[in-house]
Image: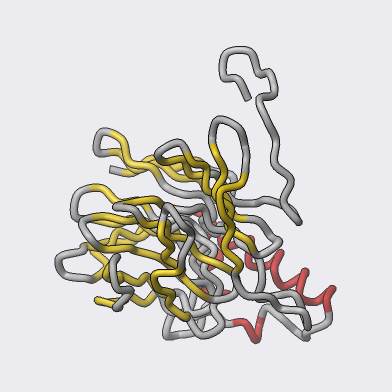
Length: 253
């Protein structure tokens, strides 16, 4: 749209819903769709420059679709996919440079690229990965005890901030590759013990009584009582801001 008037400049039709936010670099818009394609569009005209096809799941339609927004850096486009991969493409051609398989765990959150490294998170396995941005070699990972990570991480200085479905905001020190501190939402503090095992991992057995659809939805609603952090944090002037599903907006030092 025209930013001043709201007039339509162009629109581009993908094959399914679009959950991801667009990334713009060097006159090109990069956007993923639930149709399993990442598109590169001319920002001025909306004409397609190239598209990249990710994996499909014709059986249960669970391991398919791009929900992650792309990150563009040093001639590369990085994005995650529900087909359980983190992809790195050539910015100009869409050619695959490398991909990393998370072995069935969605990559829903958007990656962060900084100083030759790409940081990304996983859902079921609850891991924060650091990979070499050029080769995809994994440099290290940090575990969040199998609590899915849907909030996109934010980096400030030598710290990366990651929200968890456990209802915690976590600060990972990149030098030591460990969690420096963790803040629990009001809901997590109140309800976390009821849905966690003694080792801190999710107690899904107490949440999901069966794999019947209605029971799964009921179990998901139970987990919302933890105040999962699904929004992405932002850091401004040494303050960290993020929202929780417990209805609060938090500001931390």
